[in-house]
Length: 328
Image (cartoon, rainbow, N blue to C red; front, top):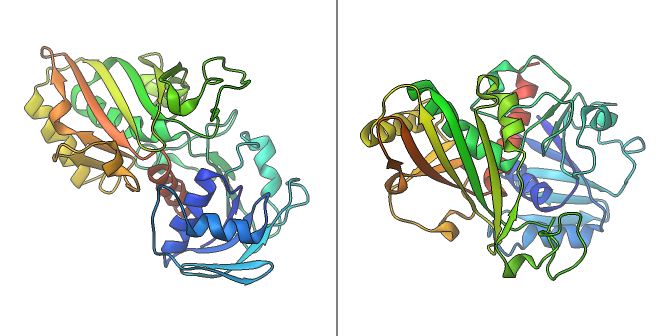
């Protein structure tokens, strides 16, 4: 499968490395707003994600990235003028075209599919491992958010085994490039403040996204976010009420079973009392923290799960792209 990436921010760069590391995929094009030397440097060196993937400048228009021998580098801001052939699927990672009506501009030449790396308006939304099997051939889809990809697999297991009646979620989320290094203007007054110096309460759209991927749980869950002074790895804190009785032992057993079967490679388990930095680079969508679960009675409980909001999400983005191309 031939892949192109539009946008070389944090997720775009991670996705390029994920594709480049896979022998079953070929990265054929990257569209970035900066030059090939800077792109090669940012792909090769990362303050968080260390790797040994070969990155080589072949000429002024092409890179070698791991198992992808010849990747064309483009710099075009207008998607109407942008031709990402010979790709079959485009990973839309700019954050600028978060709607199917906008992202469909990529569909021309050899490009048949687009996966948006963000929540998107009026766009079919999928979380790999949760509702990806309901894909029906749509040309443009959304891969939802990193937090939705972390929360949805957990919710799926909990709901299938215990019946989730109500849930409240908090994501303790590492800062991102949407925030400011130092205090400056921002449409969100709290996000205007220095990211590395503050715990910043803010909103999350995860309740809307869960309604798209697990529609029977619509109106049963809501949540908020706390942006914290760490550069990567976040945490889902989920409190929930169940229809059927549960115990701590049953909670552990059902999550462990899912992690070894239908959610293998998607849902992990932390049994070693680790901290956030231990999960930098983790390919899992979520890592259940076994010793931090609480059961108040037979119907009320809390679970915590780590997720690398950059690399874990990028792995699912690429998995989803590979899946929809195989379905054709």
